[in-house]
Length: 295
Image 1 (cartoon, rainbow, N blue to C red):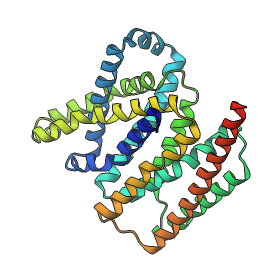
Image 2: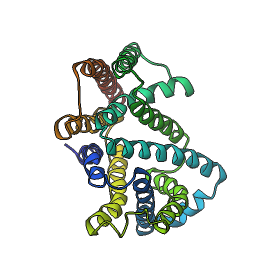
Image 3: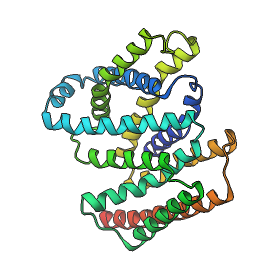
C-alpha cells in the first residue's frame, strides 16, 4: 500500500474510534465538549498554519465576504454535526451514530442530484432505493425516525455540498470554520466557568488533557485525510470511508453492549446491501475511468 492509502486508513480508523475518546469525557455536557473541541482545534490548526507559513495567505483569503459566507454556513453545519455526535455518544446511541455515517455517502449523492444536477447510474438508484427502504424499516422498528442518524447524515451531507463551493483547501477551510465558531465557544466556556459549570481545571489532570487533546483529535485525522485525497483516487477513498461507521457499529454492539435486535438487523442489512452495491459500482467505474485515462 502507498502512503496515501495508509493516511486514509489512519484518518478513518481515528474517526471510527472517536466514541471511545468522548466516552472518557461522558461526565462533561456535550455542549461544553464541543466548545472545548472548537477552541483547542482552532488554536492548533492556526498553529499549523503559522508553522507551515500559510498564515498570511490564510488571513488575506478569509477576508473575502463570499469566502466568509460559505464558511459561516459550513461552520454552523459542522458544529451541529459535532454536537449531535457527542450527545449521542453520551446517550449510549453509538449504533445510531454508525447508521448516520453508513447512509452519509448516499445522502451526498442525493445532494449532487438535487442541487448540482448530477445524473445517477442505474445501480446508484438501486442503492439509494435500498438505503431509503432500510431507513423506513428502522423507523418502523424504532416507532420513530432514527433522528440521530438522519441529523448526522443530513448535516454532513449539506456540509459536503457547501464545501463544493468552498475555495480554500482542507487545512485553511477547517481553520476558518473553527475560527468562526471560536468566539461563541469561548464565551460559552467562560460563562460555564463563571457559573461553576465548566469541568476544565476542576475535573482532574486526565480530563483536562483529554479536553485539550480534542483539538489534536480534530486536526490529525483531517490532515491525514487531506494528504490521502491528494495521493489516491476518489473511488478508493470512497470505499475506505466505510471503515469508520463499521468500527463505530462494532464498538456500540460489542464493547458498549447497546441493544441491537433482529428487527434492527433487517434494516441495517438493507443499508449494508445498498452500500456494497454502491461501493462495487464505484470501484468498477473508477477502474474503467483510470484505464481510459492511462490509454
